[in-house]
Amino acid sequence: MSMARDITARAHPLWLAYILHRLSGLGLALFLPFHFWILSLALTSPDRLDGFLAFAEIGIVKLAEFGLVFLLAVHMFGGLRLMAMEWLPWTPPQKTLAAGAVAVSFLVATLFLMQAV
Amino acid sequence: MPSDRLQVTIQRAPGAQTEFDVPAYDNQTVLDVVSWVQQNADPTLSYRFACRVGMCGSCAMMVNGVPRWTCRTHISKVTDAGRVTIGPLRNLPVIKDLAVDMDPFFDKWVAAEGVHHGGLTRDDPIAPVDEASAARVEANAGIECINCSVCYAACDTVAGNADYLGPAALQRAWTLLNDAKDEGRAAILDAVSGSGGCHNCHSMGSCTAYCPNDLDPMSAIAGLKRETARSFFRKGR
Image 1: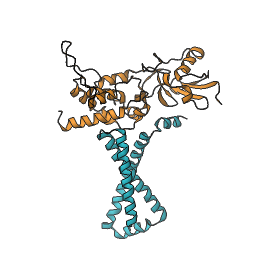
Image 2: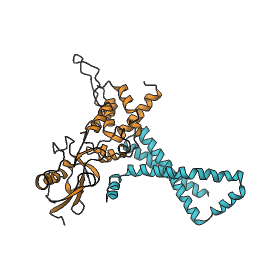
Image 3: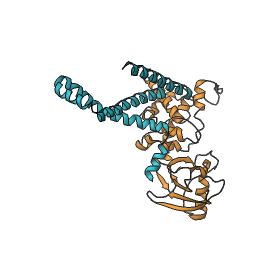
Image 4: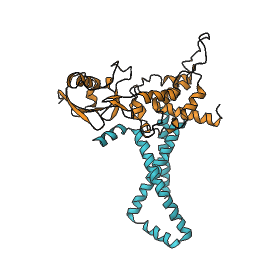
């Protein structure tokens, strides 16, 4: 009951954007050392890297990579949102237009990339 | 089907709560419900109000976990199947029942230099105020604050940092910074850039979401962040 009330008071877009930014940042902070360690295997132990790359071909691992890309995307756009909100004295309609423009350009860029691969 | 009774849970001492059966009326605010309980069911119930019309900012309470001005909140907007929970404002020490100690809130108002910094005497001509100037528009956006402390209770940064000045005090600092009649620019920027200052704000936006007067303290604090940063890079100018 108390838990439900605590969530009620925070169920608005800006607070949810805040917590999403924090959690995605934490997730990335945990992921990055592991990421760099795997990359370092290319120099220190190519065999183990090949083993890991074969492991990364498994469906469930591929699926987990979508999660990583999601974390990166929300953290990047969340950061841009925060910087625009705090450092640019724009009006709310201007911010909505800017967010829309970023979303459309990201969509177009992704479509081009999908066609290229 | 609307019931003609309300089940009202009022949080008393920490952890303790009392449930009351209150008659429902067509036009009834949350404050009316609390007053009915105090006048008809439990005269020991302590709460605070004054004007009952949304001017004085005395009657804010947590209603179903959300900070609200109770005199302007219709009970039908907040009941769930005829039930409602009312508690004291968050982030402030409870004196008794629904009455909180507002001292930390007002102390921080002063600590943020939320006071007039005059530069003229009574013999000087009155300084002109250009209503259309950008600074005056910024100041006007925040001056209708009624000191109800709803934003202070809504803010998770206040909950996590006892030194944080909070949305209302920082918004007042922002309005004074933009006020052509206020000469306290250096003092204000110094006060709001300290350890409890504007840079603690995480832009969660609960202050703006719950302000009963539709003010936007979050954007005012963002203005202070820009202005303190500009002052830092220009070495105080």
